[in-house]
Length: 631
Image 1: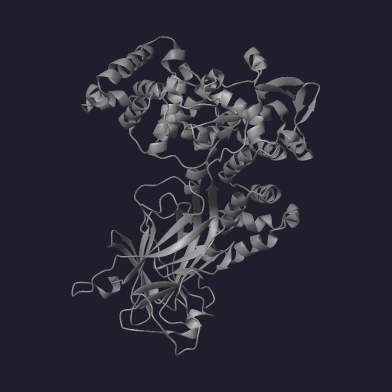
Image 2: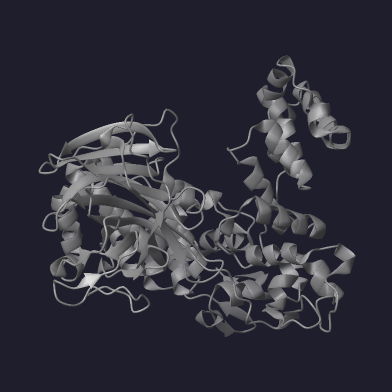
């Protein structure tokens, strides 16, 4: 059979009269040229087979590999394997069960990464088709989905099929995709041994000196190192998380590795490490004010705790909590309450009563601002790990490890004791359009690389993108792409600019997002106007643009133009005796909503709307201002 895996002993080849012993439940690749073309018959009366097909707009029609032992079928995407796996969750068919609600097979859709520690997330337009015969697939429902290997174990996409469904097809179009692997630490001029007999982790000494000067300057990391940083009481996992963030790993943080990272950063006391952690916890909207303060105190992030307490007084939140009977001493404990909380509250009250307007109206971060590096101080010039970079006739001093690790040093040319950046024609043109000097681009870019600033002004984004591309700063290119993705499209010229940038610099997610926007009502008119612009004719992807404008899925189905993926993850797909397709969204096997249609018609299934609005999924995944890649 076309599509059968060589790793399974299930075969679909042979004459139509062949007898094939199937397991009780079997998921197979539903290639009509194979399985259903040969029409195998089954032994016994309890066998249940479900044919599954997957097609994407980038990988095309995929051939699945069936695994009989696990009752699953696996499709190979570019970065992950998308596995459709049978799970034991069957409704009992009794007197009180509505036939429309009965399903006899449940399948979870699980992305599996091929490299340990990697993370993958995709936002896709998805369309699901079902059939009760071998000749015809009809659309059942469509949704915007978020697929991720991080959340697949706790809340996987679950598809429950009624007994009349014998085959299902899933179609996907990418809106956004993110794939990241952990650093490997196989290159560098400094070795760290985690045990006397382990292979060393190699890293850049100058880069480590910037973030962990206590360790590098003390010589404790030099072999032979038989104990792990005893003077700092640092655990192996803490140091590993520290390395991941120093090397700008984009893999998501969870409670466990965030705690380990905070512990390591607090022990080293380096503001370059601590500042992004402060911002992360202060901006954590999943916790309320007392919870955020308590978490900060427990993790040793005192600045963040003081910032939130001080600002709570200025905003009136502290007073509101007191009126509601909040007992801060019991909640935070005596040590934290008297050492940190009370002194900060008193300071804020005193400042609020001050006649000095600078103190009266300011927030904590304004009173105690974090100083951004300017790279031109005497300390910068005397640092042996820094090199000179000639910008606008002035020397600035940046860490050589930053340049070696996050750019290609050969892209800068060395002359008269300093490195000189490349200034391409594209960069000159953008600087002229925005009336910029090179120093205005380089300063925020290196502050971003150092991890002390994650804000880039909108008029600098394209210039930073070009500079980063010219010097192979791939992490910065990716972060500028995220900012472009979240730009407001307010004209056909802006839409065309995004498509041109995506094409020129290989910004795949910007291309995906722009093509998807062409289908949406609010941008559709811009797309129609864009194709009349003279510059449009230079685009190489005009065919894709025009196809999306005319035949994009969201042109006719507004549900596929939603800015947020559905919060639902479980669906029931059924076909009754009259060939009527029934689609229901579910939670904990309970029916939430029903939208059905005849199989010959286009269904109009829509998910249950949520009472609380969530942030745009792409923004939550991508905005550099909220990204941990700034560390």
